[in-house]
Length: 339
Image 1 (cartoon, one colour):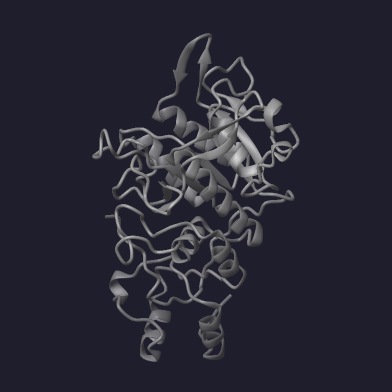
Image 2 (image 1 turned 120 degrees about the vertical axis):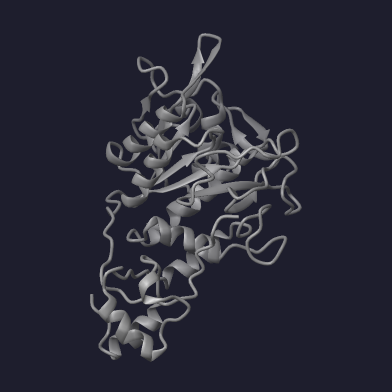
C-alpha cells in the first residue's frame, strides 16, 4: 500500500512554491491518447496538439478512444451528453493510432517525452493518461516527477486486467505523484475488471458510459480509462477555482473529500474512495495550502512548545505539507507566520 500522506501534522508557511497560473478562461488538459475527433466534438475547445506516433499526420482520432475520453470531459451538446468540465480546453497528444490497418503504439519513453512537452510546450495544468505500461520506466518516472515540480497534475488509469491478470500494476498510475483511477459500476461497487493494488488512488463510475465516437455517433463503453476522465475534469475544476494549488494540494483535496468505500480509510480496491467532485470544489473554496521550509529548524523550535504540531521530530521533518486557514490566523496572531 502506498504511504498515505495524512495531514495530521500542522506546518507553518515560510516558503510557498509558485506554479504557473492558467491565463486562459479554462484549464488546459492534455489528453495523451489516440487523438480527438473534431468532427465529433467540434474544434472550439480542442487546441492544436501533436501526433507523436505518426509525426506527419494530424491529431484526428482513428480509433475512438481519445474522442470518448474527451466527450466525457467537454460533453457533446447535440447528443445531450453533459461533460464533467464543459469549459475545458483539451490538447490532443497522440501516442497510439492506426497506420493503415496496423495499430502503432508508443513506448514508455515516448509517453515521457509527451509529458515533458505537455508541461513545457503546451502549458497544460492537467495530464490525462488513460493508459499505462507494465514496466517501471525511469524515464517515465522522471517525467512525472518533473511535471510535479512544474505544478502539473497527472491522472492515469490503473488498468482493466484484474480478472485475467490481477497482479498487473500499471505505470504511471502506480507513482505517488500520479492519481491512479479505478472504476465503479452503477451500483457503486468496484468494477470486476478494475485493478486492485497500490496504484489505486480514487475510483469513480467507469461502466456503461455514453460517449462519442470519432464519427460523431454515440456508444456505450466501460473501463478505468473512462473513469480517469472524470478525475482529470475534477482536478482541472479545482485549479480553475484556485490556480495556485500545487499537484500535492489537488491530490490532498480529492483524497480527503472522497467518499470512503470498502475498508475504513485507504484500501487497495478503492484507494481513498469514490470521487466526490462537488465536495472537493466546496473544500477548495476555503482551502489554503501553505508550505514550510525543511531547513527552518528555528521556527520549528518555536512552534513545538505551542503544541501546534506533533507526531514528527525536528530532525526528521517532512516538507510541503499543509495547514488550514484557521490555523494560519492563529500563527499570524502568535507572530510566527511569515508570508
